[in-house]
Image 1 (cartoon, one colour):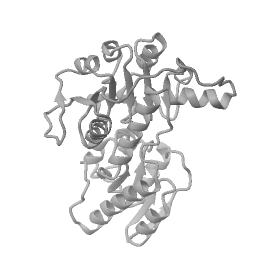
Image 2 (cartoon, one colour; image 1 turned 45 degrees about the vertical axis):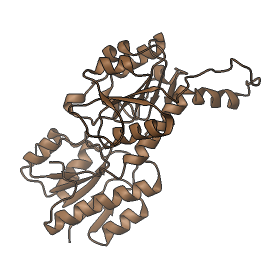
Image 3 (cartoon, helix red, strand yellow; image 1 turned 90 degrees about the horizontal axis):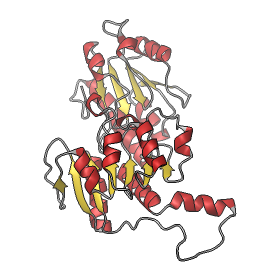
Image 4 (cartoon, helix red, strand yellow; image 1 turned 180 degrees about the vertical axis):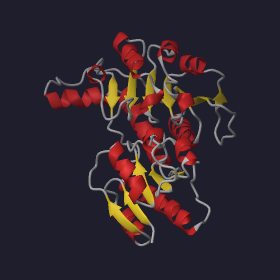
Length: 318
């Protein structure tokens, strides 16, 4: 029977599904695995279910020819914490869990759009502070969301789900920046450059995968191109954004607001960012509902089952 490590406490349904198929050990810490733990894992287990923050690097694998662990089932769609090329070189298969996260992540994008545009975070802090003095006609005026122009960076599953919600739910005009033209079931215009999209949009949502090519894709040039009332939302990965440039744009009033669910050096959030009232900051809640996490777990376990059985792995990424 294949010996499998689950790197964090998982939903009970995920653990039960894994235990029905494999000899399972559940690591009880909620913190990412250290390099030493990962090296030990590659030596001791046949497969590991890893997740965000469990950084598999070429350096960790360099001491192995072919490690005992031949499969990493990533619990999550993003896998930029795993060096998939190094894994390939050492005979380690990597999979992820796309699809299961799409709607939940798009819902968080809508949460951030509405909170940032309508200053909901500021408003809640005002009420909780006891300083609210009552309604008046110019109190906390924000950006009206309905009918705005939405710019989407990365029109994959999640980008499309956000755009669909904004178009059909809020009557927004949609533009997008993507490597290729997309055939969509709603009207949307592909815009040739990222800065052109940033200048056109009222609300700019980042939904592209994190890859070496997209590292700090969004930086000072993009923020300089945005309109002064423009709202920037990131539900992708933190290192796609130059966080210092974002902070500078917020501090200077170059852009209107930001809504973030991810950060460049997560879980560290810069003090300067937390000090900005026009920044809505969530603790990576994109997939944080039990049903979604159970779906992710089911996909990860199925990837492991297929690997063990010699079947085609449904969500193989390398």
